Image 1: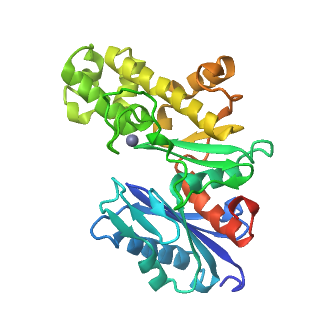
Image 2 (image 1 turned 60 degrees about the horizontal axis):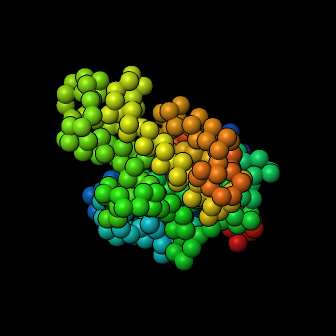
Image 3 (image 1 turned 90 degrees about the horizontal axis):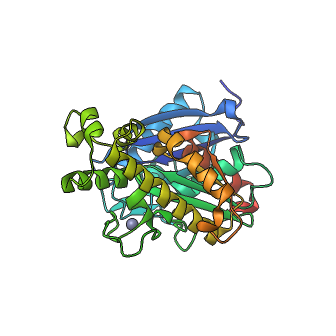
Length: 337
Ligand SMILES: [Zn+2]
């Protein structure tokens, strides 16, 4: 049995497909991070809260840690999320319009402080603690390009939260005025509609139906089954010279430059770290961004350009952010006060 006094932090990352839970000693020593994940259940509005409790209980048991040793649980969720009430609202991928995360957890883990955070805002804390250099720490942005596009920002050494905790919904920034491309949010011309996984996919399918561009290579890859087309196949077809896919990928990159330019205008950041599922095809996105902002940044941003980087923690960065949130809250770190 481990020393009873050793204190532990728990972190949770809730996404549309996976729920990840971690525990770690309060020093957040990388070697002590233990992780479990499970598919996101959407049976009732309490399914997610109940799953968190089950995975966390399992992790504690397997690592011989008692509930009483937990000094805080950090919960990062796809938003929008009210960080005071722990209620996720209006999320398109989690199955319910209103999801109360707090109740099931308080019932099973009474007396342990809970800290909620929007997942991308949490991720920037993870970058801050686990990988950012000293000279970039105080003005740092994290951007995820995945099913959607989201972000988190630290300015002047303080985490930006906003009135409910959703201060950097950058994916819904307008990158194309007078656009006819509709975003999942209902507006037209959002960055997410052009450059996210779902945006790339639906623009390709629309263009295929219009029939204006040659898409022979793409159609061959999916054996003429349009329902098999995802961002992955589109990026592969573009690499192989498919005309339509190349245009869609070019647009994805161009509007990402516009988006990064806006983010830098708003936050005047030292570095932007990218993450998210679309970074599987990072070679077709990141070098172009780096070149643009090193050689001709003024085309997209009036402020001095940021460094463009990738998080090395891939799909674990949100979870690391949730752990960091608890550590910073307990230590009253100025980033979160
Ligand atoms: Zn939108």
